[in-house]
Image (cartoon, rainbow, N blue to C red):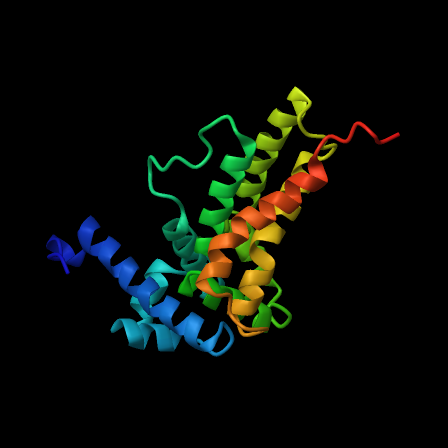
Length: 215
């Protein structure tokens, strides 16, 4: 860790390293043991710091959990410059998005976080609020809704509620694969995962296609 400044105050670099050290310890404990069973004392011990030092960085356990979720989500985001929504063909763009979202949702930390939420959100309803606030679901919904609205204006699609449709598209991409990844059914094979985005997009666009036979 970087040198401590005169007067005992840590440098900015040291402060950032300390924050990462605490988050590393908290992430490991939360995902392994759950929110309820993880204490601030346990996080402090795992990080090798005092509880006083911990409280200088985080006021309580919910704020710590929010920081852990935020970091997990940020690390699952596409790298800067990644072309996910470029291109005129909606099918190609949606398949690309679906493949990225699926890979992110099946990453070890995302699966462990999902398992934690399933197990503990009833006892700790604030966890769902944290995930909604720190997660990227609403951002993804807005992005996909914009793509659908764009194609609807051309007449290629018929989508009365783009945000509603985008929300269900995400559920189609994520829900079953994640459910199976946490043990509720056999995990998907590599072939199933590879084919999943195309199959989801096929089904989704079939439901959104413009049908001139409708009355």
